[in-house]
Image 1 (tube, rainbow, N blue to C red):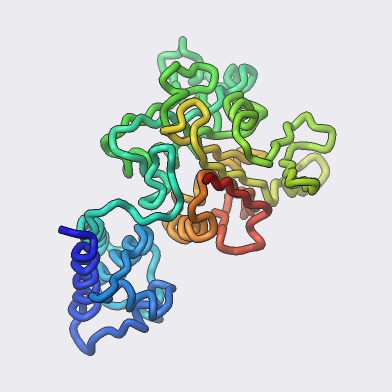
Image 2 (cartoon, one colour; image 1 turned 135 degrees about the vertical axis):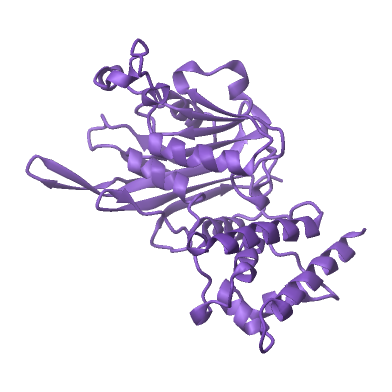
Length: 356
């Protein structure tokens, strides 16, 4: 089957879903466009039999949510995935798989990935069978010694208590395992890496204060973002050096007597080729504090924002080999709010590397 017939096959299915999913008057392309947050001409291009266009994976996921609903959403707005009932979730999963299978072609151009990751089919989805190593810093000795269950001699020893950034690790490990069922996903301490870890897909969590791998990688990759450690005279943060311009970004901390409250952190997300193996990727999620690291992770795992943030990167950095986004990570009662990269005030700095 050639590519044109593959595209037309998906177009016919999308048109059928719009016309036949719910009883009553036929659903218009305009209402579908409003629910999905796209233009009517774009819906028309997806349904065109003469010159059909393939929706990107995040749009296929949204289409699956829409047509899995028991009824068309009130207000023509697509609900969040976590608001679906059990039957809708099951239908959404089946329909998304069907739509993806209907393509049966290589993912569209989008972000180029010389490093073996399928960036157009989800930023945490890698080619089948490729190992992924998630690397955290070890908890400093003084903190580990204060936690009885972090002592290997304890009968209740919990190994993960020796890792930093556990919120980020827990969030990301489950997500990567879910979208890469045929891959080995390893949890590693930066102080105990094996030879093969360096040449796998590397996902590094945490800033330069504790994670030595974050520090080492930033000296090897060509990104104009330099983290400032906590012992910097002016405090931790990030410095961006673009040409002759130099900007410094630091967290917003409110001080009330002896009490310090983090109001806003700085979150850094970087994805590019692994400098130890150009056929794999390296991803760095870091922050000035742990909340910033968690916010960086959540930009592309949070069900409410991952499609929107993924679409922003794909549209903004199409054809890039690597990209970096420095963003605000706002706090609400100690909780990190997921950054929305599509909002310009959220982005502090963005950069991409293009190759010939």
